[in-house]
Length: 491
Image 1: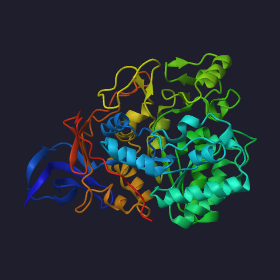
Image 2 (image 1 turned 180 degrees about the vertical axis):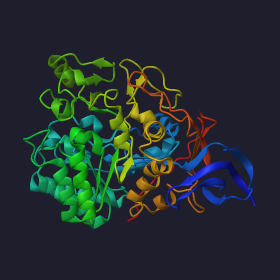
Image 3 (image 1 turned 90 degrees about the vertical axis):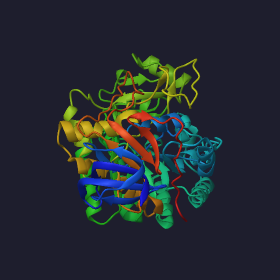
Image 4 (image 1 turned 135 degrees about the vertical axis):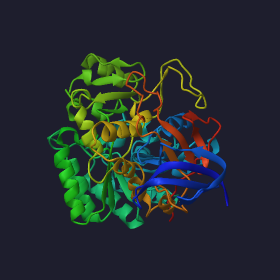
């Protein structure tokens, strides 16, 4: 037969089946129909000799859901980017908006515990905005204790979001660390009853904050065993910081006991969030910061390193939703830590990509490409997967190439495949699977984004195909291509 697209002569790596060999891949419409040693004929042919052909990467943790942010991720090999840690509310509005605007890659959302709490307790409107609850993290109102009536309303609204196709429940517990632990158990029980995962930004650890209501890692793992819910530990590296060994041991122990626990990590030494959030209070910088001083903080809209407590308080007051970096550790001094993070057992790679930050006084057209100089983000938004392949595979050998690909593809797909059955067709290069494919040069693929130049795309990704449509060709973005489709749960 004649295929629409044939990817010819590449090293095909399918982590689920264990295939690692030279093959030809035939695509018809939005499906892979052949992975063969035999010659195939295509209306369009891609010469992949000397290159790796792998499933498109699946990012479980991407707050950057606009067209520009998704384009940047596609140039890093991503074909599906999901907002699961923070979520959005209502999810129906977010799905409708994305479908109307179009997306270059596949998209999907969890139900946002934080957004609904902001609405029920703090009176904030629900908009299904692209940045989810990130704009309101600096508000104190939503972190107040919930009355019985408010708790009931919150649970009812979460349940309705699940009916509307949310992929699980995103829980930003670390941003409201005084929340009653019983509320977290109730949310997990709701998720277990609905058969969906929870995606948790855990509370601080006892070592980081001796006054915390309950140790974040102990709570998350205990609730997994207590409720039977699928508990996903978001960015286990950044919330665990110097105590990662203890946290990882807890996670492995509860897995061994039969609980459903998954986790993710990103290969960077700095986090990013709203400067008005709890983590950026001068008295709380020690929780995540490398030194616990304002100098750990860089205000993203201007690139300013915060010089003093007074300046930090000023920024928190004038722009509480403004994004800022916080240094977790020195990436140059502890370069080996990056590879170790990538190689954590049973841990997927996820970017924690953030929305674009626009320098004050400028206006950004989300369809403009490339982004202008006044647009900033965290470099992980552009380079998580290129950096993983460079550092963990090529430079240190902490992971083999098939192991790294598994962490970027089939492993995240399995987190959701019981909730969204279409994920069973993603993260694989097999006949009958979705034609989400990345073709890259394993010897040269790398991240290019830095903290100073954060929207530089990765290089070495020659072709990225989403639902059978080329989004990246010969390393260049196809600006007209918007083939992304929604990933929704079935109820």
